[in-house]
Image (cartoon, rainbow, N blue to C red):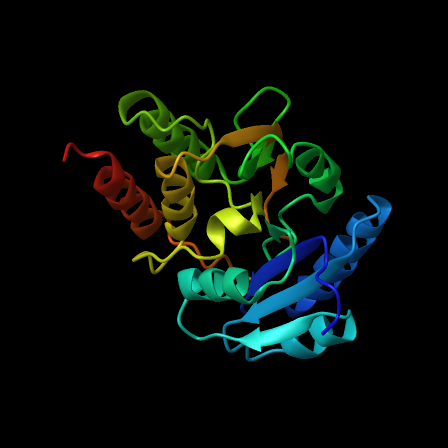
Length: 227
């Protein structure tokens, strides 16, 4: 069996033909610039366009997973072989050029979060989404005590040994909140580095704002409620 890579990129995608090839190529280039070996896993949710072909052409291994967003990430993390796991959106909204900033903090915590809500971070997204993102994360941090300013950010680096064994109940985008809280509950650490998040250039967002918000609230409350 080939030697395990330094980092595994897990990239969920559904009908992202226009962006996925660039995301895969940029991830490989970013890892190489850090002197890190990598593997690239695209978790395809049964795309009906050319996503699979574009991802494979760029050098990714494509895994079909039709169980939804959480199932895709959970399986991708479980099947990854790297010492670290980086989650990237398949639509190109995560700034791959910030990988170095996450990589530099890999020894400091089990989870390194690319944060839109700390100094020098930001986001170019529709105003209503920006307002709700800030409101929800402030609620998580101040009212519920989550020690991360941007716990809904999906751009993250995980120490694989801290997350590869984890199980969970999340089915949607609240998986990001669930896995963060699982790590913290087990005594792990989380740190944040600033990123600038941009709205997708192509395709349609799969995240529906109300179900997303309710899912995050349910997941956070389940972990933090007394008893």
